[in-house]
Length: 90
Image 1 (tube, rainbow, N blue to C red):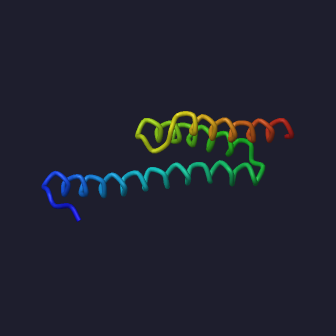
Image 2: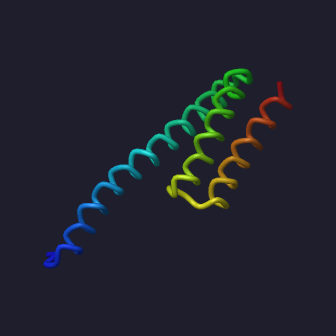
């Protein structure tokens, strides 16, 4: 248990940050799930709209410190690759 005032404050800050980051990560995963569902239904127009918002939200997660830049770029790249494959087949 924290004894000093500084340590107690750090515990409070960490708890707040954890809750905030958990919500941000969940939001990013929700946007990704939206793209995957649109891809599964083979709806190219809906998938394109979902991809644009998901890519934006993923990169926003980078600026907020939820994930690293290369991780986000990899996720966006893989989603885009699947979107291109869908549009090529259609």
